[in-house]
Structures are given as C-alpha cells and as structure tokens.
Image (tube, rainbow, N blue to C red; front, side, top):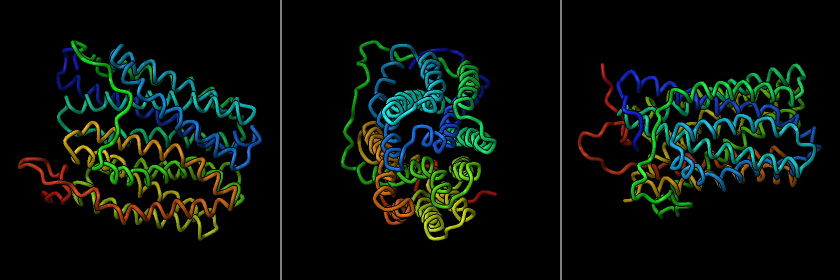
Length: 405
C-alpha cells in the first residue's frame, strides 16, 4: 500500500482514533436497528418464521457483495472507499422501518446487509494497515469500539422504544447523525492506495484450506450465538416473557454491553491465559447464560443470560482469525475461508432461530444457542497455537504471559 507520507507517531495516533470512530459509528447502526426489530415485525405484520426469513437477507447481502469492497479499495483508495461505503451503510438504516410487508423488507434488508458488509471489509482492511504501521495490536480495541457503538445505538433505541417513538422517525434521525459522525471520523484515517503496478484485482472468493475448517467451525458457533441473541433477544422477552417494549429492547443493550467490555479487555485476558483457556471459559459463561434464558422464565434472568452470552463469545472470532493465520502456508486464504464460514453462520442464524421457533418455540431455539455455546468448550483446542519463533510476543502464543511487576 502507498499513500500519504506523514506517518509520524502523532499522525498515526490520530489515525488510530479516527478509525476507532469509524468502527463505533458502524456498530451504532447495528444497535439502532436491532432494538427496533419488534416494531418492524409488527409494522410489516410478520410471524416469527417470516421475520426469521427476512433477517437472513442482511447476511446474504453482505456475503454476496463483500468481494466488491476490495475492488473499490483498489480503485479509489482506502479513505475515499471508506467514506463512500460507510455513508451508504449509515443511510441504509432508514430503509427497514419503511418496509410495509415481507418482500419489501427482504429487499431492503438485502441492501442494508450489502452496505454493511462492504463497509465492514473497508474499515477492517484500513484498521489492519494502521495496526501494521503502529507496530502494535489495535484490532481487538477497534472491535471493542464497534461494540461500544452498538451499545450506544441500542441504548438510544431502548429509550426510543420505551417512549413509543415511531421507528421511522428514530431511524431517520439516527441515520443522519451517524452519517455526519462517520464523515468526520473518516477525515482522519490514513489515505492509502494500492500500488497497482502489475497487480491483479482482488479475487472474488477463496476456498478455505482444510486446516481452517475446524477453526471456522468454532467461529460459526460464536457468530450463530451472536446473531441469534442480537436479533431475537428483544423478541424473546416480549413474546415469551411478555415484557413491555422498553424492557425487551434492554436485552439487546445488555448483550451489547458485555460484548463491548469483553472485547476492550480481550487482549490482556488472552495474553494472561492463552487462547484455548480463554475460549473454554467464555464457552462456559455463554452456556450458563443460555441456560438462564431457557430454564429460568423471568425477565431479570433473561437479561443476565443474554449478558453472559455476549461476555462468553466476544473474543472467539478474533482468536479464530488469528489461529487461521497460523494454520498453514497461506494465511490470507485461511482467514478468508474462516470469514466465509462465520458469515455463513450469520446468514443462517436468524432464519434458523425463526424456523425452529415456528416449529416449536423460541425457548427451544435458544436451547440450540446453548448447545452451540457448549461446543466452544469442547472445540476450543482447535485454537491451540503452533510453536512460534523466539522473540514472538506472548500475545501470539497459547500460553500465559509472565506476570510483570
């Protein structure tokens, strides 16, 4: 990558804060949308099953259009591409609450997901480039800032739901505010361009090597639990536990809060205990949370349960990507393969939860989430890290870092 020549420490610190702001704005869109899903379900007159069908379309749109982001980056440069794609994503928040029926909602959620996926690729690519130039890890904290944004968006969405604000008004105001915030943040990111001399455009698809399949399965379990909790927790409290709209929306906030806290602290925890033990403990916490949701039919238990699920699965996907990069001779291909598997999980989770709920109940649906959380405990050993060369930081090993005074 080439681009601006001012890479002084002060400029890089500014760029780090700027890309963190981008992650925060991106997450706020997701949080704003998730808390109003019950309103959107009622407005479009959908059952649990048809809502699940509609909620598959954001991940479908993302999975089919993410490869375009690499080509847009290649053509316009990182800053311009991110400015365009992030603005499309924040403005897409307006669309779902306008949909009057199932098929219109499916279409707008496909567009919503497409803009989400492309902007996600662009900001992560720029985050990695910023990390490389800083020569220290920042990706965990960037994903933590995404969760902070989701928390802010869901908290404001909870307030809007509690006061009975029409979701169309809420999402219009939020979209305009987040578009402005995103444009301000993008101004400070690094302006990098791909050196196109003799370079081919990015490929459309990369098959995962065999070494990444089991790692991808761990990511699949975590993303399934995340997607199910984010999209269905508010519906669960409203329809199963018969809470009001404000308390139902608070379940999404509880989930986003624990995800944010765990991601912000994740690097230090992994440094101290290693990837395998961290995921095992996380799986135990998520399983406990799932049991609270399905076995204790009380709103307080459900809120605590969704919070524990968020806490338990928060760092799994970053660790899966890191393990994939060390799993074979082609790190980029392995990471792309794991990303494909995890996005597939995000694709099927909402519709699978809805289908199971239609056939049985939402309680049974979250029983499935609990089982997948337990699978993290059993399968964590696939994240066992390979021997590393001398001098590599303990952050990249699967053994505790020494405690320093």
